[in-house]
Picture 1 (cartoon, rainbow, N blue to C red):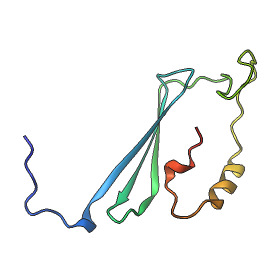
Picture 2: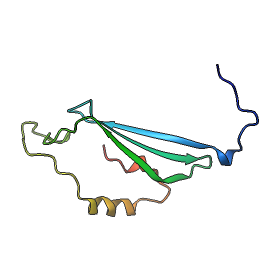
Picture 3: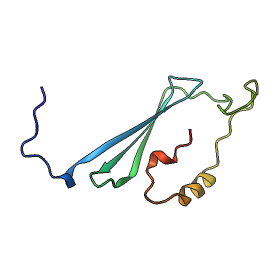
Picture 4: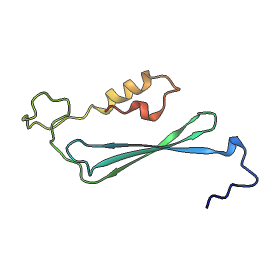
Length: 101
């Protein structure tokens, strides 16, 4: 049974917990969950928690690969390149907007 808080907290004391979950196409048991906080005035926290669940599949072809028979492992974008792109985005962007799917 739901019982409302009395007295209700003021808006500046309320935080919203936001979660974004990703899965791998080749292994649905592997998940990556990213969680962050947002205040009532839509201010996004500077800190995000990244959690990985399950076994990551190494050497699987990238999902945009034209030839799925290619056995070369997918090479992740270097951190330096990602950092450069991150700095080019507007400051008002949310963490989930940085995820390339």
